[in-house]
Length: 179
Image (cartoon, rainbow, N blue to C red; front, side, top):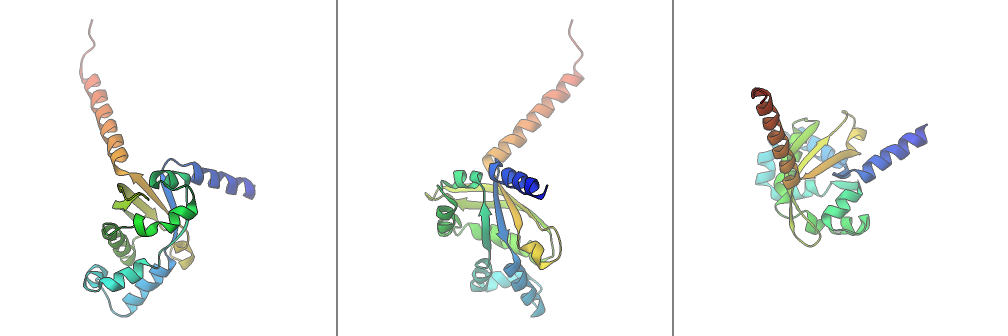
C-alpha cells in the first residue's frame, strides 16, 4: 500500500498543471533562529540594512525537486538544466518575494502567499502567485516544503472568469422568466 501511495503522490506532483517545487528551508530557519538569538527583532529592517546578510540567507535555500509544469514554464529540457539556470531564474526582482517569504518565516508563519517575479531560461519575465505551507514545527518539516507557483496572468484570468460567471448567474436569478 505504501508503494501505491508513493507512486500516486509522485504522479500528482509530476503531472500537476501548476509549477511545484520541493524546497529545503531548514538552513534558512536555522539562520533566522540565530538572528533571533542575537537579538534581531525586525528581520526586514536587518536585511535592508545588511543586504549581504540577506543574500547569504537566500543562498541557504535548497531546491530538492521540481515538476514537469515548472520545466515547461521556464523552458527547461531537464531538472538539471533548470537548476543550473537559477542565476537567470532568480533575478534581482525576485529578492522582494524572497524577502517577504523569509520575513514571514521569521515571524513564525507556517503559510505564505504573495506575488513573485522570476525569469525563464531565455530571460523573459514571469509573474507568479506563490504559496507555501510548512506542516509543523520540527526542523524536519522545513526540509521538504512544497512551493506552488501559478502564472499570474492565467490566475487573474481564472478569477475574472469566475467573477463574470458569478455575475451572470446572479443576474439570471433576478430576472423573471419570459413567456
